[in-house]
Length: 387
Image (cartoon, rainbow, N blue to C red; front, side, top):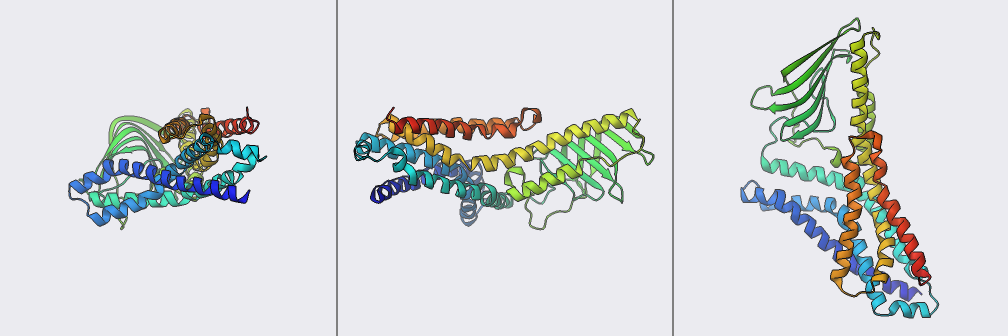
């Protein structure tokens, strides 16, 4: 039995290394063509900087390549194992399928731990460093950066939140004006805006603005404006690197961001609660609080849920490889790509619905794990019984 386990494990590991290498190269090539190659052609990057950027990008793409590689390895090895009648020989000697694949299942659980470390710690840090190098190569980081999806505290007496930042074209802005005691004194909500870094200090030009002033007696004066300009005296980072977004945050950083959002978005206890405008403002800010917290929760669940992909893919890949009973590599790769596409569709759906807290998008991220592991367990049971 030990010899058989060692033989099967060596086959899976060899194929796993090969498939992960291929998928990593393909994913790296996509990023190179999209970002790095353009900079290299425009002579904004040196060869050393490109190699360093690629090295930092490997852990990020490895988080996607590792589950894909494990699924492909399971399909290829057990498809060939079944096609060569080796599985029939093993069963004729009285060894069950579950006893045969136990080291492979253990390997998949070990890879889940590796994936968790990569997803929750290594990949986000490498991604931040990679983006810093890309930003440095573009030589555009001397301007002001307003990262999306997080609070910006670099402006004295202000807290700024940007829902979306597309090359300084901003959407869903919220600016809190604070007094010396850090108490809320004004709220500016804008549907869109643009950051003009040609001015000194830079100017935030907003459109479709609703501005509310909270007086010391608790009353609120609300007004609407077609446009509003707000100067921003932002502190510029000496490193020239932009702050990380949610996708570039480690799990502990996401936890800290969640605590900050829960604490900072709430209004202080105001006076004059009978003021209808103030109650309307509080209701609007409470809804915005839910909308800003949910993307952080979704990202935290994504990092954890995605770490279990290797186990689910292995449970599905082994019986599918046996059932396919094929030796051809292209068949196994095609099946793997189809299953990966189904799995990632759930992840994309959960992230796309992160602005709809009532739909519980963070739970949608766990659905592919539940489906793949349940279906894989049933198929393994049937394969073990020869059904």
